[in-house]
Amino acid sequence: MTGTGTEDLLRRLAPHVLGALVRRYGHFDLAEDATQEALVSASVQWPRDGVPENPKGWLITVASRRLTDLLRSDQARRRREETVTRWAVVDERGTSDGPPHAADTDDTLVLLFLCCHPSLSAASQIALTLRAVGGLTTAKIARAFLVSEETVTRRITRAKRSILDSGIPFALPGPAEASDRLGAVLRVLYLTFNEGYASTIGPNLQRVDLAEEAVRLARTVHAALPGDSEVAGLLALMLLTHARHRARSGPDGGLVPMAEQDRSLWDREAIGEGIGLVSEALPRGPTGPYQLQAAIAAVHDEAPSAEATDWPQIVALYGVLRQLDDSPVVALNHAVAVSMVEGPEAGLGLLAPLADDPRINADRRFHAVRAHLLEQSGNVAAARDAYEAAARQATNLQQRRYLNGQIARLDQERRAVPKDASRP
Image (cartoon, rainbow, N blue to C red; front, side, top):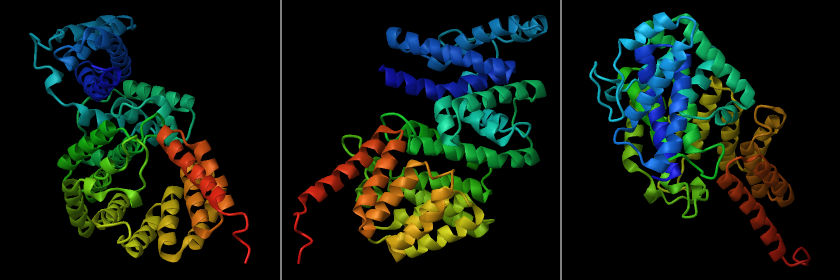
């Protein structure tokens, strides 16, 4: 297996291994440390020696042994060792002479709700879940939050300590408590999906495995809460957006804008499922941001071509969404939709206030949208400057390549215009 293949496999297995350890031994903070050490060992040994027959069993074995060592070094080692010795440890083949092992059980949903416990701050809930369940590094979590890696590390450390001190049982919460945690759970899944669909860093435009893991987790939550409209809305949004992923990259891995995508590559089965989910959820109410975003995605996906997109309906949906979510990203997308109906100048007018918003004015997306609208309005020089600003802020290689390509295109077009083209 290649290094990339090993990395993908380890990322998928990490939350299952951590869930197995916490479910059986408790001690979330030490279990997370032990899991990480097992993953590091696997990343070294598996490319050299081959992937074991039961990779999850192998990881759980190594992590369990490391966890036992960590527990023995604790001040209360005698009491904790007695707890540990009551459990049989699987061998590398994943077999056991004790109770059925967590290798046969998906503890991911329990782990998800544990990471979103109300004793944690909202920021810590999301950071811990992205790390423990989503498999994101602290660097990628920092980019999602637009904060430093040190800040994310502190949040994760405090979160693990809070879970340890609280003595929270590793089990699904009751209905009332689960409702309190649901908003954070959905936000975590949303950010995880976005990182998979449009990676913030690295050589690849998207991490399909991460996006699909977020979809899988959203299905798990939807199966547990089938009557919740926002859960259905989030799952619909993921399906309707992920349905386009095959068309978003060219043969060279480069970004393909939606208007230029081959829509025959879109996953019509996923689109049908997503439309069905949001169509059922919206009348049931109450209407929330995920349902509205899913409705916007459905309008895009139903259009047979870019030219046939119902932009007035999208503008109306963004108008409602802005009443529920005042984030600058929603305002940015609203400006794009308005420009498609009323022209680029109208869109630029809506962008103007965002230039003073520190949450978005240093973001690649703001400068890229502004560049496009400036070009559409005929201000090519300013558009070029905005494309350069966007390229400087881009941390994903494919996004940077696309933006630099736009700069090169404008330069080529300018050189192709005769010097006396403006003369009568």
